[in-house]
Image 1: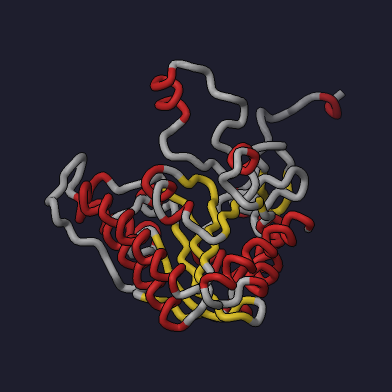
Image 2: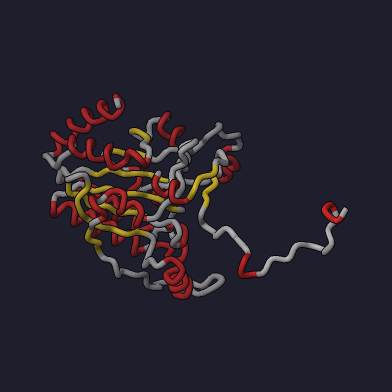
Length: 301
């Protein structure tokens, strides 16, 4: 019967009647493979509601999350990299920076700003991994140093959100100098008794880990973040031994005493407000006492 036979080959639908699902409507978790709408994923601050996997987000997203009503004043927004070494690999360094600026809309791998978070003043420096792997060049070091100076002069708590592949090879020694510069600025901040909280996100590696990222009055991290100096393969080849399971994860680093606690991004603003409420700028001796109290409080929570 004709009902059960295809008279014409294929089914032809006019182009204007085709229904296609636009890109970017759905999110599939890379860990548990759960699927939700992008609107729901964004509502959960890019955290999987099923397994808690934390996607990477940009500095702009952290500013929106942390500052009340998304209102803040950016610091040194137009600071850009030079080319002190006239470095060339597959392309000249200035060309690489210009192309990255066009693709990302960023001037460099860190943005700094100040505003009010949960009713308290706060200075935030947040790194962007999409700008040359969040690498630390002279601009990154200078912007962080200036943000620390602003926090010290205004006696405002300072939050550093690290996400980086390490030093920027195109600036060689100039990049490595930022480790000492930012560390020295943080020492001045500590002398002034102004709180510094370091949030380590995925990934935090290389010279960033070896300097400002691990110097907080509190070192905290997002769940599952990769935290380390050299990569696992390099370490394994150096020591000639297999590495423990979960090596360099935030949970492993916490277990071995290098973090104070791990915080879910959805609770970050509330936990940070509680922490800074206990660490209001004070003389150094008082700040150290408040730190001990705060550690006990956050672990109890």
